[in-house]
Length: 276
Image (cartoon, rainbow, N blue to C red; front, side, top):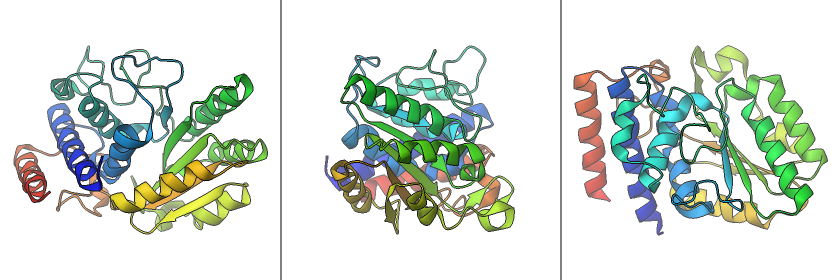
């Protein structure tokens, strides 16, 4: 797909995020919106996946380590055809397969159940190690939040991945600068992120604009050329990207739009789609 086509996909994913969180009257739109461009590139360009065969053995895996941004993952999976887009309106409802955090047992396309921050990257490392052990060709991707990497388990997993040269592993840090209690700097800064991953023997790629599709494309292309060490892509993004009143506002970390806000946000995304 072209960058413009992928931007259109990302815009549709953003609509799905608003649809889900509005219907649920809860959820996490801010960090889902910041990662929408990454989700679009992963599922529509980068990853070997098949909605008709979600469990195929040679598929690439994505572990959403920041599991609370499930609305973004679900919107991407629905857009890719893993399940009907209408299902997004059942987010967090009793009996729905789309719960507040991903469940691999219920949702087509979800490769790992996540939610407790810091643990997803460990599961991804295990998957990558298994692929190397058995000689399998699939690649493993994991998306972390910059607040999440304050968890010590992240660095235990990173240490293992670097020491074992897991070059089929790509760690993506959605660096939007905000977490539930405030800015990263106010709460417990993990900066400098890139240098930390380099110290753990990662090849690091830094994106000045992690919402720019051309930069995202170049980063994943570079990651595929790296041999002998895992890759970390540090993507500078905007929390709430695409919805004006949500952008860079920490209050939208875990709050759903009301009816008026939903209509405004959807109108903005409709207009953005027409411009594309």
